[in-house]
Image (cartoon, rainbow, N blue to C red; front, side, top):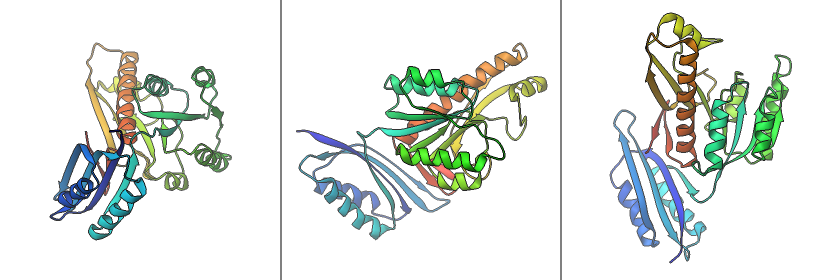
Length: 284
């Protein structure tokens, strides 16, 4: 029998009977649960659930949604239902460092990421040819202090035009305004080195080398108006030592940034991330 994949995610105040109620509803509709993960946070008193299941062809998605809405109202759930077959549409923003962009393009093109890169935006023209090699629209939108507001309006217009699900700041070296952050709330991910708050500004790996750091890391997080302080999605580290040059550290850092960002994007497009106040629950 042919089935359709769906992913259900929810969070709500923790109480007894949530899993029983949701799984019982799916059973009544003839759904087959393929994977289920849950987490109850004692600190916040909230419960989180992700269920991947098959919906029989004979059951209309609208009927499923209507039944889920009843359960959602009963338990005060923040509930989302996603068609697992649909590819999320990405808009990637980049400046002059292209390692994260190149990595994401390859992973999407090779099928490692279940997503579609709908467009690339940059405040420089360096990666127009790379975008063209993948057949992806490239939008060169320079930005200055005087044009920043209009440039951000142009970016948001592209988000609407292309039906973007997620904006990925792949080493986009511009600070987004508070208005831009609000417009992209929950659907924009940034990557940066994990030296912060130390070694701010230009050439952070050279600054770190001068101080003799022993660990290099990267952090992917949701974009908020609090600069580089949004809910963390993924992190990783790599040990380094005194024999390595500043260029060596930069290369190690680039590799970690690419890996961490790709993992964060994967978690998002597979609907594995749920917000828990200023933190995240990321199901594996």
